[in-house]
Length: 358
Image (cartoon, rainbow, N blue to C red):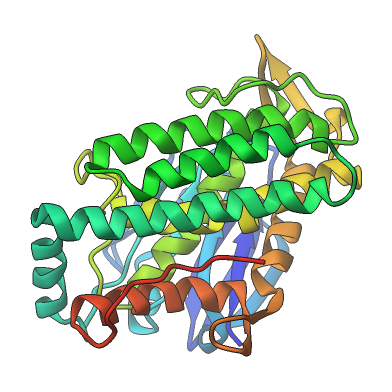
């Protein structure tokens, strides 16, 4: 099984034969200045010579890598990107604050334009688009409800909120427009997030979702986890013939990978939210793991690594898929979700049934 590679240290990434070389850079120098030079021998942009390696280097065989996720200051050369392209390895970049800032997606030499044309046709057909958007949100809300039910079984009083969400789920099933769907989905999440303080075993000030910028500890964790989820979904979409820019719930445009946002709606409750509950309730992450300024909380580097470790464990968790009656990891489920969508659009299956958990 291929692995996701997460890089948190300031590093230089290069290619050595059929392997990737990762060298740590010294943190002594400022890391946010523009300091590059052109090497006349290779005609590529390289890190400035003042960034000297501290001697720590790792070598990773290209065949073993699913995708790169970089945090902090990372420098590349052209040979590195050529190797990414040759082995079809996506690279996702996050800034100092843990926010997703962009991806390098290799050219798909095996792409099928007919699938993208069909995807566009489904988007422009209001009924077909509505059907896909509705089934995705049905699955997302069902997974949200299952999360609350699992804690209700443990004795937390959530019955009133669960009933409200189930009423909204019925309304989603009867929705007649994508805008109406998005409105109901927003109402569901408002109720859902109001339940979180009852689930947490540590006390945090959290009563609603605030995104830009994330306000408070829990909003910071949600934003970071969701950014990871979007990048993972983008990687899996890349492995299929779908176009990540054409979604069904989220509107295309503004350079957003709308389909990645759509697919992530299904899996955020069962992956991101479950990781947040775990790191809070097991005190893997606490208030001491954040720096704050004016109510804006940022994960410290060590805590970010802890979160990613738990996130990766969750992705690798193998479950029994009830409908398929076989064992499969969450990571494989995301890719299978993309292929299910393709199979529905080409008519191989009669109905599209996104993943619903327990």
